[in-house]
Amino acid sequence: MRLFYLAAGFLALALGVIGIFLPLMPTVPFMLLAAFFFARSNPEWEAKLLADPRFGPHIRAWRERGAISRLGKTAGIVGLCGSAIMGLVFLYAPWRYVPLAVALLCGSWIATRPTA
Image 1 (cartoon, rainbow, N blue to C red):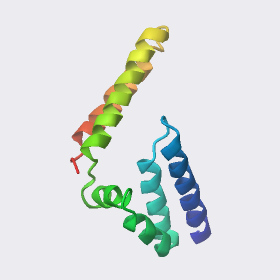
Image 2: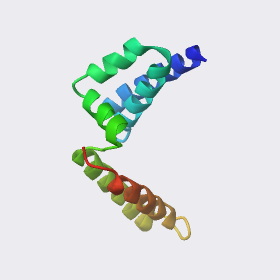
Image 3: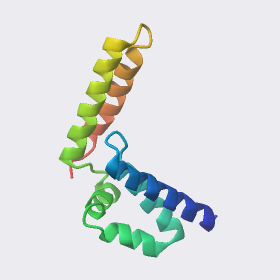
Image 4: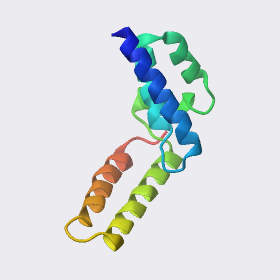
């Protein structure tokens, strides 16, 4: 099982690094996932993530308080709103309401998380 968690941790880390360069791919959620997997497989890699000045504060805030930074909340909600608007404009009924429903559900969840 430890090997599975280690492989999953490296996969999540790789996806997070890709997210740094691709604008539509998230970074911090994959780093959170990598820290979760490394905590169960390799404490040294977990410590490296927690010590990283870019990702460590986000991981610690999520673990301690379930908090999301104000910038992260804003970016997430703006992105969801953009997707909902594009869905309403470019999709046909009933599919045009799916992005709106996802935006409302996910945006509500993001907005209710504590701010880091």
